[in-house]
Image (cartoon, rainbow, N blue to C red):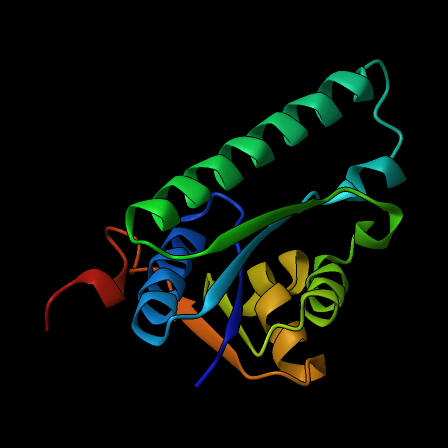
Length: 159
């Protein structure tokens, strides 16, 4: 059904679950999988005093590469053809959703798989929603995978 699937990873639990689902789908359909990690460079907009941004950027790149290497290893273990891509350009400056959409277009992805944190209210207002932005602007189908409820939350407690 989908020959090319794109999944975005960021190290969150919801993104990890999205990767698992994308791998499951790719294995079942014989699809090619592209795993993308976008470095959110929004920190460049702010005056941060004496912090060396070179070290911060290097740390973000290293962490992103680790995520992509782990995803590639998981894909190989399941026999899924996998490419990885890290985006660290001006196009990602504070707008991760646009960066993911551009990668989807460049790779010919037919399905996007994303984790969603399910934030609501003020938290969503302050932190935004990459998943919501992609659902609204993307032409390809988008599969959202929720993280499990946080421990101690009302949703995590049995009825």
